Image 1 (spheres, rainbow, N blue to C red):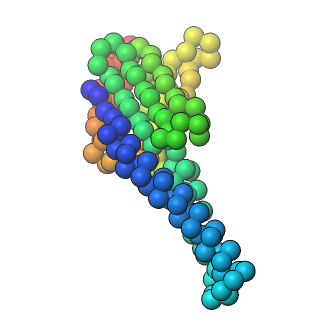
Image 2 (cartoon, rainbow, N blue to C red):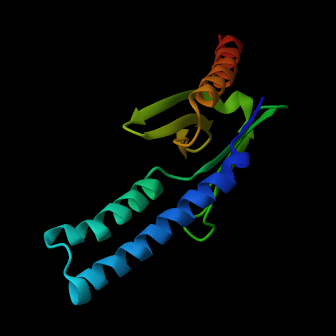
Length: 158
């Protein structure tokens, strides 16, 4: 099964650009109010706070693009940001038989996928992916696919 939200990259890029423009215009409105117009008093800090808060929330939600491929004998996970220099993209590929378990944690608007795989060195390794920007249907499809792999691995080991 293949799952990707790469086609939504243009929407995420638009939102990011819009938020950056809001920050720039907020700074300009704050400076104009403070040094020229004096139209609002203490509320002028909202010109700075609200756009910066929205931009921080957008980036704290994690990497926007998530791709998953379970076709063949391997599981392939890719997780990247729409802004290439923000952080390193994640790319992991491992055989299906190494998957032990997975867990999806949801805290407010943030969703994380934790995948536990068997490892020769430590016994197991936990890989973390940010799936906040997946729709609920995509998350359900991901759960269904991972459940099949985990179930097949348990049956093989028993």
